[in-house]
Amino acid sequence: MFTRYRRGLFITSFLAAPVTLYVVYVISPYAQAFYIAMTDWRGVTATPAFIGFDNFARLFSDQIFWKAVTHNGALLVLLPLLTIVIALFFAFLLNVGGEGRGVAGIRGSRFYRVVFFFPQVLAVAVVAVLFQQVFRPDGSGMLNGPLMAMGLRPVGFLSDPGVAFWSVLGVMVWQAVGFYVVLFSAGLASIPRDMFEAAQIDGAGRASLFFRITLPLLWDTVQVAWVYLGILALDVFAIVWVMTDQHGGPDFSTTVMAAEIYRNAFSYFRFGYASALGVVMFFFTVGFAILSLRLTRRERIEY
Amino acid sequence: MTTTTSGTSAVAASRSLTRRERRRRLGPLSALSHTALVVWTALTVVPILWTFLASVKSEDEIFGDAWSTPARLRWENFARAWEQAHIGQYMLNSVIVVSFGTLGTMLAGSMAAYVLARYPFRGNRAVYLLFVSGLAFPVYLALTPLFFVVQNLGNVPLAGPFIGLNTHAGLVLVYIAYSLPFTVFFLAAFFRTLPTAVAEAALVDGASHTRVFFQIMLPMARPGIVSVAIFNVLGQWNQYQLPLVLLQERDKWVLTQGIADISTAAGYDQDWSALFAALTLAILPMLVVYTVFQRQIQSGLTAGALK
Image 1 (cartoon, rainbow over the protein chains, first blue to last red):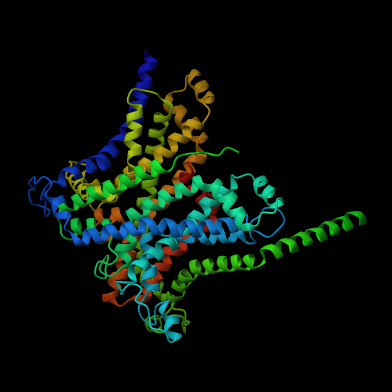
Image 2 (tube, rainbow over the protein chains, first blue to last red; image 1 turned 30 degrees about the vertical axis):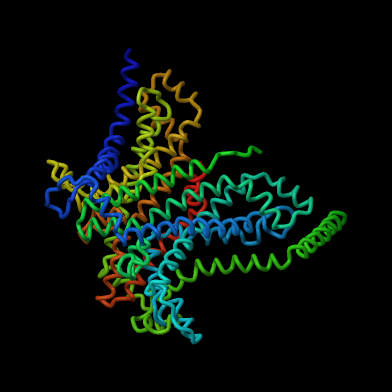
């Protein structure tokens, strides 16, 4: 009797603080957001009135928000695609692509793995400011300086609405690749060496080593990477908010859902409307999560 | 002695033969892949080095040719960044918030994860799912209500002034709460893999549940704890969105806010060299810490994805 009481007391005392914190700061705001989304709450002091689904009706004709959604959509496709292709290529070179005897990485693979990971440890806000300088539109920019020295016209990396989105994508890929090189390397390390060696003895070249052995055995990890990068693409905020002109400009050519939610809430103080945008974003994210869980059937290969 | 030498040289000869044979087969590809690696290394390193270079330039040199070298190393840029741009203050704020944030996350997270992993009780599964469901929610949905939750907590008697808006303790609590889903998810899985015999023996010997946790289970879970701690330190250090909403008073700001702000403020204040010095101050310590602990950091960050 006493031990049961003691056990119950222990469970309660260990769960009390974490659960309280979590309910107060995470669960309750999410729950409130769904209600706030159905009010016309504007400004810090105003009393909100319940307006049902009016915010959602308005949202459908909000050009800027749908522009943001298409940008997230484009990132959702391009960011994982580019990052995974580049990272797989490098992970393969660093782990099995070496020209030495047997299966080994290329010379200096440890060095490359360390360096490629650098951007991953930097804060996104810091990376954003860094690239703001790299992309400067005149001869003082790291990229435009050499371009102009060669007599070419400077590129408006952040000032040209047709280019700015690609600059954002480029920076995101730049920051993400190193992490996935390491992730795929860890995946490759768990594949027994004999598999590669056997294939090599049978005369497999590097291309068939990659497509016939590496890729199928790494497929599980690639799927995980796809989900992670997809969520990163849907969640992007700091890089757009800090790096681009006018927070998502020029002319909303780089804006994303998160930036529009933040802008509506904390620049225009449209709390109700911003929450409605948040609810839409929530369904996009959950939809993506469910879809990717459906598509990624877990077929583990046991060695 | 001679036989061994000739033996090795024969092996070496045959080895170089196979290598030459393989190089013939893979030749152009090999040169190409080396080039690709060098190009990506340059892409990674050059922007960072360029920033370091600009941090010791004068204003005129920064606005001149991008690749010019400075006439004189202007270390005073760093003093201005540290003092006038308040990078020193912001960095201290970041250190305080992340230290307590991570410590609190690890304590709360490991306690919850341990109980959820090892003590079956009614509602266990529900509590676990409650925590883990947080992994799927975009934080932006919660931003507005979170702002008001923290504002309202500021009006709570006694504790209010310490945990409301513009307080570090308030931000620490928010960090802990938002770090819990991943921490609980990862550590619960880790605790489940640990053997039960030692803990059971200790309980039979009369040790309390609390003591078993702190003196036996926690040390056993060390590798998992270290991984998640690294994950949380980096995540909280790099956090920008939450402090942007919750800390509006300048002297409370964390480093990411400070850096993001100088880039906009530099337009008016015209102190670009201090901006580059500030960037360098934000980047360099991270690279040094990363280079020293790179093995742990890489495995800490990727461990989560491979679970």
